[in-house]
Length: 579
Image (cartoon, rainbow, N blue to C red; front, top):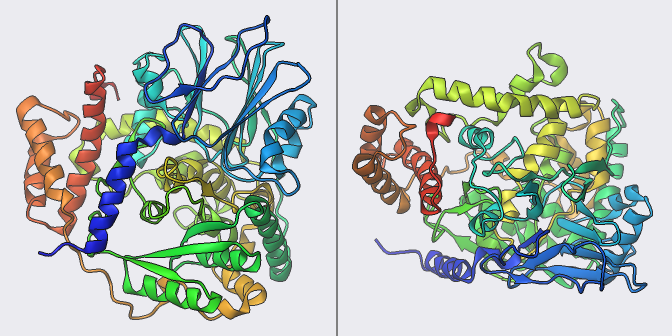
């Protein structure tokens, strides 16, 4: 069978990108002069004053988007800004100084004006205080903790573990969440020493004292109900301001143009504001590329079609990567677009659909006010994988029950935090879940190019917390485009095309490899004891024959195998019985 030439090209690009290292755009930091420099990093700590408290040591990958500000007044105050942040009136070069000024002056709500995926570290060596500022949506994963009486923090937990900055103790609450949902919704990490920082907040440490969290994004609740026209105007104005702030210093960006609404809205905004776009469409379905082509023609944009062979994974050289939290997770289609133009910022429709149409406002088809069951339990079930994505029937029921017991407290904390909003389900799903799970869309190619995510802005988040859920309808996007960009009116959403041909199943080339790898490990050395071998082994054998339903068995088992194998290679024993 002849290989798709474009697929071969994508695989070659991906191999090259992976060879250069996923840590090219990462930072780590710590207190402690005797801690080793993690492999693949270089120290970029600002020069220290002759005396005073110890400096925060900062390390960066080989191609990290890092800006450093040092107070010229000799105040020994330093700000490290990681990411492509933007502001309506402050240039990117001056943004680290502006952030330092606002935070030290106590004007923390001014940080709502900053858009983009970023983390800022503010090192005040006069007082020994370190402040970690997350973006409005907390979209850039960053982990912090006290390990061996030292402050340690960074964008990826594995380099911290491999450099022995943190202990090898595993966080089984996080593992339970990852097993059930594919990501750690407890907001910890694989390792017990460090956890994810809070979104839209300033986390402050002084020495080894527990970090104090100050939220500069406190969302007001309510059930306001503007008219559809008022809602559209308010949303479009907020989105336009965020888009301009994100892109005003850029000449060019790239965009994955799909059959959905988010990408065409971003494309229209780009044309409207003079941002040159390189657009690509992954032709996963014939209807997808047709819709994208229609949008591109209406907007006068060139469109590059990325053909696939109909399989789920063949376009990737390696379909899995390790997320910053330490867990393996599958790649997303935007990765195949981003790697075509390394270094060129990539526009991403992150949370756009959620904030304009509200597809997840209802969990199990009910709003919070419509369910009598504890909201945290409904939220937990909604995040757990369904049978089509995970084969929990191969794992003993008592293990799954213990996993859910471990993760329920995290769901309760999140529900309690947003109980005052118009829709607690939506607030938790959009402000918590999406930053980790859907955020994987752009985090996975962070070492290749920086993301631009204008939908993730304070005004749209505030609207979500304050407006009646009835404001968010399927027709919202259609009405918005009809009013603001009438040339796009009438182009349907990909999912609304009637009689569209469905993708025929084609076995991915990795499926038999995954099955053989896991089978060999289970039979030779008793790997993955979490599985019931009598059920799992026959189904893995069956997946070798290419059945569509059996592919998920190989994928699900291989995902767990990857974690177990990486831990073993690091000298860390994974004890599934601890779940």
